[in-house]
Length: 212
Image (cartoon, rainbow, N blue to C red; front, side, top):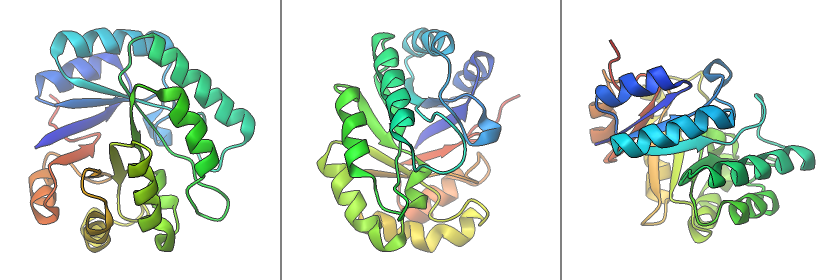
C-alpha cells in the first residue's frame, strides 16, 4: 500500500519518513486545506526526499476557498510550477473548477503545459466538480496525462465511511491507468480497511502514519 501524507514542514516530513510513508504531499497552511508552500521549504523537501528515496508532491494552490480561479491567480500558479520545476520537483498537484462546477479545461491546459515534464496529480478539487461531469472529467484528465486523482468522494463534512459508495463509482468510472486515491478522514487506523474495501493501492491523509 502506498501511503501519502499531507504535511507542511520539514520536521514533520522527517518524522513521517521514519514512520514509513512512501510519498509526501508538501503544503503550507494545512488548516486551510493546504496552500502553495514557499520555495525555501520546497528546496529542503526536494533534498530530503532524494536522500530518503521517497516521492514528493508539491501543492499548487494560491488561496483557500473554492477552485474557481481568476486569470491572475492562474498566472501565480503557473509561476509557482515553473519555480518548483527549477528546484527539482518532479510532481505537483493542482485543480481548477469553473463557476458551473465543471473541470476548467482551458486553465488546466495552461498549468499542465507549464508543468511538463513533471507528473501532475489532480487534488480534491475533484469533489467540487458536479457529479454529472465527473466521468467526463476523469477521461479528460487521463487523456492529458494526469497520473492520479485525490478524492474524498463527497464533501469533507461527510465521513469517509459514508462516501465509500461514491468512491466506488468514481473508481469504476476512471480510465484504466488513472489512479484514484481516497483521502479526507483516511488515517493509520482505517487506511488498510478503506484500501481493501475500495480495491485501491494508494491512500492519502495527514494522519496516514502514526507520528510519535
